[in-house]
Image (tube, rainbow, N blue to C red; front, side, top):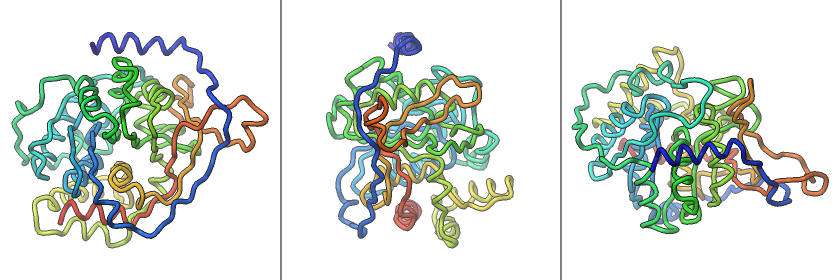
Length: 355
C-alpha cells in the first residue's frame, strides 16, 4: 500500500492547482482570560514526530497532561533517521509513563527533497543530544504495522474525534491521504509545527526544516487536508521566548523526568554556546492540548508551499494581499497561522510534565 501511495503522490507533480474560492485573510486576536476548565476537555491525540529533543519535550507534555488520550506515536525521518526516531519515542514513552501508547515506524524517506536533510548537528547524532543512552528499551515493543496504515485506522475508528499533531516532516500525512483521500474529513483538526510566514528560514535562508525536508508532502497536506489546520511557524517560535526562570524550574525537579531534560538541555546549550530561549515543537503541542488558552493571535488565510524553487524550495507561500478577493484570482483561506501565543500558559503545560 505504501508503494502505491508514493506512486500516486507523484501524480501531484503534473496536477494544476486550482483556485477554489475568493475570500480575504483575517488577523484574529484570541486573547481571553485563561480558562482552566478548557484543559479538562478530553482530547484524543495522534502524534506524528521525528524526535528530536524538542519533540521529546512535546511528547512528554502530551503524555503527562490530564484528560488527554495519546492514541499512538508515529515516527518519520526528519531530525534523525526513522529508526532512531522510533528508539527515542520508546525512551520518552517509558520515562513519562506512556508504556501503553503504541509506537509505529512510518516513512523512512521523504517523497521529494533536494537534499538528505537531517538535524543531527543541532539535536545530536541520536536526536537527544547524545546523553540518553542510559535509558534502556526493548525495541521489540515497536509495533509491526506500518505507521501510515495505522494512522488511517486510528482516524477511521475515531471519526471526528482525533487531533493530529504533526511535529516532523509531513511525509506520513501525505502518504496517508494518497491511501485514503477522504481521511481529512474524519479528523477533528490538525496542528502542524512548520513553515514560515514572512520568508524567514532556519535550515535554509527561506524555509523551515520540517517543510524543506519534504516540501512536496507539505504542499499536499496544506492543499488537500480539508479539516481545520493550525500552523505554528518558525517566526512564532522566535517571538515566544521562555521566561528567565523557566529553564531552572524545568530542569531542577527531583525526578528522573526533569533530570533527563537537564542532561539534554545542558549538553545542547554547552555545545552551541546558547541558552534555552525557545522550543519549537513544544508550542505546537501546547496549541493541541489547550488551543483556547495558548493561542493569542492567528491569521486565517491561504497557504501553500514552493516545492521546487532553486532558492525557495520549502518556503511557505502566504496570501497577504488586502482585497485580493476583488482584484485577483484568489484561493480560499485554508489554514490558521498561529502568530502569537500565551507563553505563560505554554510554560505551565511544559512544567506539568516534570512535576
